[in-house]
Length: 240
Image 1 (tube, rainbow, N blue to C red):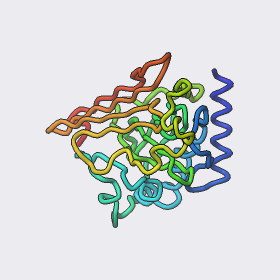
Image 2: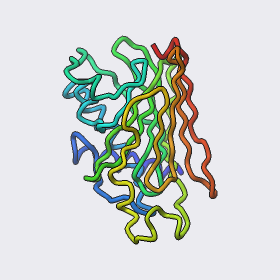
Image 3: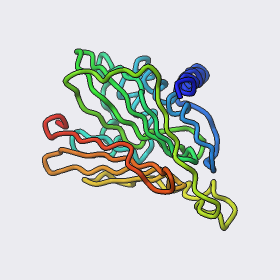
Image 4: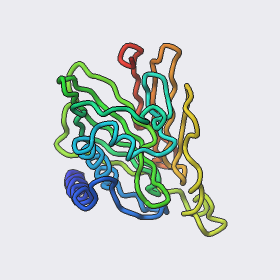
């Protein structure tokens, strides 16, 4: 597992060097095309863009049109980011864990961040592959921590099991890669939201309470069923 994780990191670095803004590759979704290193590269490139061009500029440039942020209420990110000035110094962050659907159409990264004043915390980014094969974030959230996350020796990655023959969406038409290409995971921000990969092997959902405390859950297909792999709770105090 550790050699595989090292390979992910090396591939991610190569992807970032080749593309300073959004990470490659340009694979079309399909059975077994998951490439977790592409999400690592996307996250690293995202952070580098924040350093080079400004924090909110980077958030705008890498977001999907349906992307959601919590401020602390859930809001369409591009609406909130439009015209917002970049802070003098951006956050710094790096991914520690990756989860990805079998078809590579959707993935999740989780890792640690550090604010300019020294505050530390964790972040979670949900990435969706667009029609060009690029990954854009559709949900970004995080929270401060009393002490920094322990940095793992190697980045870890988990890919969903692929659907069985005949279970792939659109299989009867013979074009599974086209299924759902125009379906955004979320059309408008609300107190509840969810999304799913095109093959149904990765799902996510959030819920926000009236006091803005929130939860985020991610499930991955393993051993023939959907299993929770991430369950995060942010208190009302930390959400504000």
